[in-house]
Length: 266
Image (cartoon, rainbow, N blue to C red):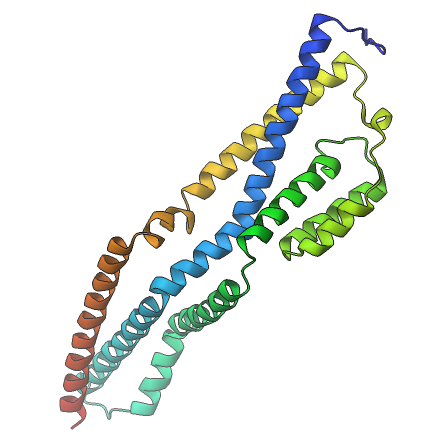
């Protein structure tokens, strides 16, 4: 039987304490996950591209050119073996079609480099970044539906606006929403029964476990797995040398294919 007016029993007191703890833990993990996805991921990617992106783009371009010349040499040789005229325009058109995916990757990488410059040039100051995070956390504490299951439609809509403002790094909008926010009606938000509190505890524990899993997965994926490399000049220097060596290898292949083609069509 559900107790609609639970007294201050030991179980009820423990549930209140546990709910407070889980609310804080959920809030911390939720804001951390959002910060990683919406802020840190973009900045780390931009820094990675700034430090290595231009060399990687050059390598991709050289690899694509080497692949193009290899295909061209093979197709010319095939025509010669069949004792057919070498139709260079047709060969070039066929190669262009086959390499569309690589050309698209080059274009995407170029756009990513441009985006990285814009992101790094538009970074908030450290002080404003902290204000953005803290203001967002306060608003999540007041408006997140998982912490306030009985919130109104207006509050749900307001939380969506908070999410959008945070994604756009609009500290001014977040501050306006916080200032305009009415004091919460605790009587509406109160979980009044022991059964409801147990249900909230179970749901929050599941959500916390899910958030921990997502955060751990993020930490082991790009660009977070490159965080140490980005800030380690010795590793960066070594990686640049490796990429330049790969570029040199591609350039040698390009020269070989160019000489072979010149001989075959000469």
